[in-house]
Image (tube, rainbow, N blue to C red; front, side):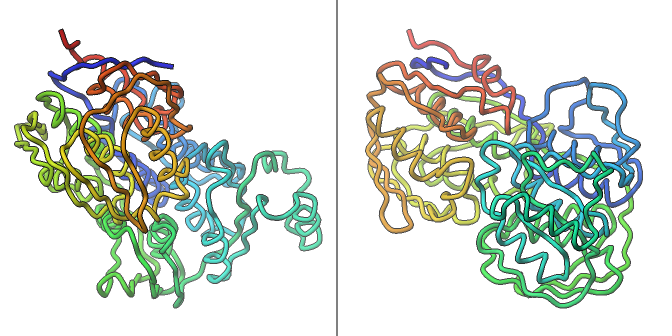
Length: 450
């Protein structure tokens, strides 16, 4: 537990590498089969990397045979595709699970994708249905008895009792290919992560592919996927994100990659600076394709301001007379928590659209935000697909929970800096999932109000 008291912010914040970009780059490295030099925000001295990126790294490293021999993360990541190890731990990373499932389905081996805590409860039905539609074998041990799965494997000759590396403890998905090219329909309404995995995998298929996509809700993340693919010399085109054309028999070519700083983590400090003081932070790319760069648009609507400095540094200034705002977070649902932290301190009414994107995150994020913020005196309600916040004074003076959700923990911490009374937050450890140094960075730039 941590107690946050009223404070103002001043100084410089160092942001972690982008989680969404890093995991996609790790997948591309694996598919390239070649060494890749990672620069930019990627750590060079053993700096801790968030748990979700570590999960993707474990998946790639487990399948590969040439990865780092030292405990620290090298800036040069060698790949490899040794299929002798097929039990893969995705931790709590939904992106790693949903994106690597179709990538691993390129192989005719069975892979067991495992997870823990919040990931076990998150939806995978669209992954299963999607892979089956593409002719792959895929089962979930969350929905079928483990014994029946094993018996099915034995009957079909897929079960290898001598292969002790294929453990069925805490499994989520069993996947087997090979994934072949062709024409398919994909429903991306629940998440774009599976579509990202298909886009990355299908260039290695034996023939060309066409994906007809319905209900794509997270276009910016697909743009990021296509950009990473292009960086590795692989191409795919689309017709207004409705139909994707992916030539087969392509090759991922390794190259030096600059990893951007994380806009998702930066969003909390951008809100913090707008509310409580001037901050400089980076590295953040001005032309980034990360969805959560949209935080700048929201802050601008509330009356905040910022300026770009040298070396990919963003300067955010304390706002004056901040007002409630209207914002559509349908394409960037991870911005909901920092936007709520901003809204509770703005005068008037704020409406944030897209709460239907929050029901299957690390928590039921819409309900968690409503309930936890209400405990400290915030006025929040849900209307249709919108979250309505009546801003003003935040009383505080209560103990609240992060609900096992890293983004809620960070949101509550930022909001608490402006509360009239101290706020105790349970679950501070959850930030390691996306921003392990969050508390250190916050403490570094927080000054007590005298």
